[in-house]
Image 1 (cartoon, one colour):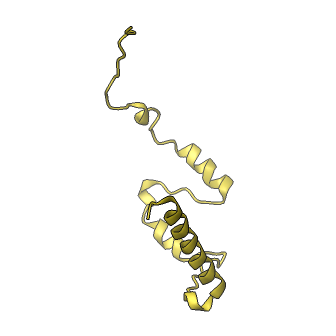
Image 2: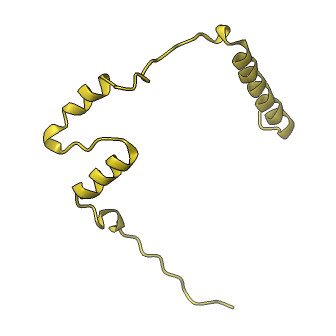
Image 3: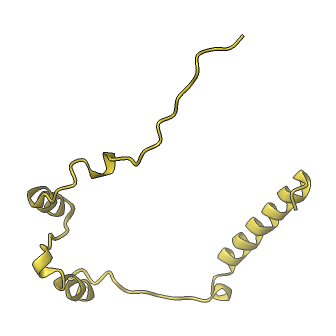
Length: 93
């Protein structure tokens, strides 16, 4: 017993281009509500300069070696061991 034939439409999706126009008023509102800034295309180069000088001072990057954080090293090694054990039990490794 055969049913109705099925069809598949193959074509590029156009939904990505629906409503893709620039809406500066919406962008300004989002920036204002989230504490950010809106930059029009004419001021695009100002973004990098403003990122360097943050008024909050919360842009400090601190790097530590793994051996300076033994708890994190133990957690990473335990995760790797658990993953290896699970693979061995399932016969994947």
